[in-house]
Length: 122
Image (cartoon, rainbow, N blue to C red):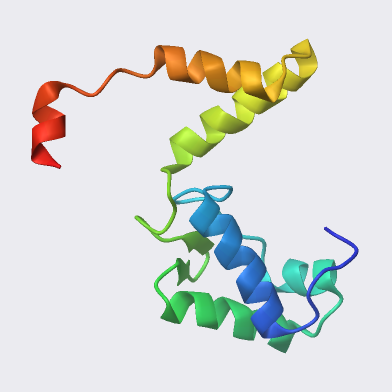
């Protein structure tokens, strides 16, 4: 993780909240275990657990015994499949040396134009 990693439950929760709301973590994506999160951020397990509880209280994650903690349905800007596809697009684009602006241009060209029915519903 980042060298400037948060060292408080609030800081860890804020980092994960941002990842969920930005779509970097998609609906259904699994978060690391509390133990792993504590190790990654160099904090006590109780601190990491407090961060996860805060996210659960906000409805951003769901924790199930034996299934771990996952991003709650509808919490992310994008479903897990969309996030996974976007990650794959980024990897391929970087490998092929395609610039960010060019990738965005391709997406804009492929994106269907809104129909006139959609515009009148707004």
